Length: 138
Image (cartoon, rainbow, N blue to C red):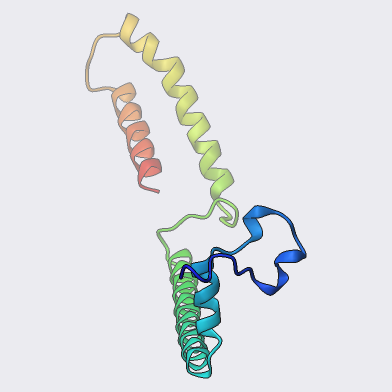
């Protein structure tokens, strides 16, 4: 190791940047790896890495395709509402606007001027509550 301290790699003269020079121990490792047995080990390791990467890539593609299939299945079920594709979403939004307007106008009047009781306003309020609960569920 002491005799190799002054050894530089063959292409060290190309660049005078001190960071580009290999330390003697690294250069010795590179020299040792250039033997046929070491090259064979390196190529076998590279092949194993390629095989594992390919297997992981296949697994990843299979997982992604399974997830896409599952999303398509869920999107076609009756209880999932896609606002971009639903034909009745505009009518539902209009109903919610009407119910919200009714609640905004009637509730303050009811609280300020009417006595509680089982009447038409009570029934309308429960219908509004039902619409809001359905909106939460949807």
